Length: 329
Picture (cartoon, rainbow, N blue to C red):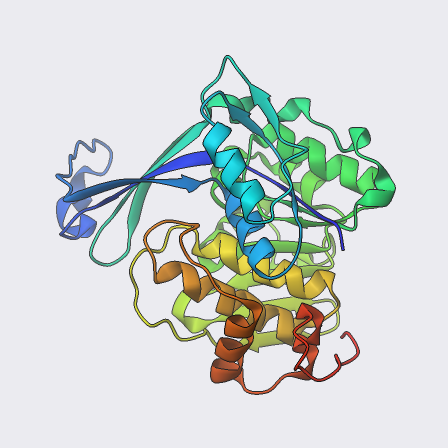
């Protein structure tokens, strides 16, 4: 199964604020905000939506291809990704740019304030799926990236008949209605969290049911309330998996998308794919950093079973002791 992952490639700078953001915003002065937070910790980690997703896909036994743009400071990062099973042959390096930078401050309630400097990411629009042999692509995920590139990739996937997941996430604030509607048209899956779903409805003027006229499926993550998937034929609701500790939420959504995509791409069916996403996600929230978690397929299956019970459809992961897969839904 050939999966291409597109999206931002970035260095993450993660900081912790020992209080609550909500205590420092005055409701009567939100039109003139001026706040500063003294943080206790600062760490640099490998990040970016595309490598985050690709890393978890590699843990799940795939050999994903990372299609994105990075700067002259990407060398060590690239070597590390290759060492864990991510193919970076479709990643273009620009010697005159820095790799993009994500900066996030997290408070005691796990609320976040973040910023993102594009760097080399702004040149991802220069890449094209027309430069990749069509026969070598089974699935694509279009995760947050340069908005022009995201629009271009979605259009090219549609023209080339490639199944794709459209994951606008934080870029919803930068995408206009016409670009969004053109990008999402024909997507196999649109993924959002519950807040982003409301943003999507407001942006498009469409209801949840009306969105399904344009995409085959809508997946909505709901944090501790689990995840829902809506297709034109059915609905699926899966409770969240249990986390041993809630340490740092950055990258949880990316890991979920990796588990979801691994399940769908290998024909596991919706309930199993949603559960796989949930289990992949909890590994991230238990660590600081988006690629500091690690597990074997045996570990993953055991944790899946601890949360959801036996599931023969997990045979799609290739773990030998699991019973044959069920027919895809």
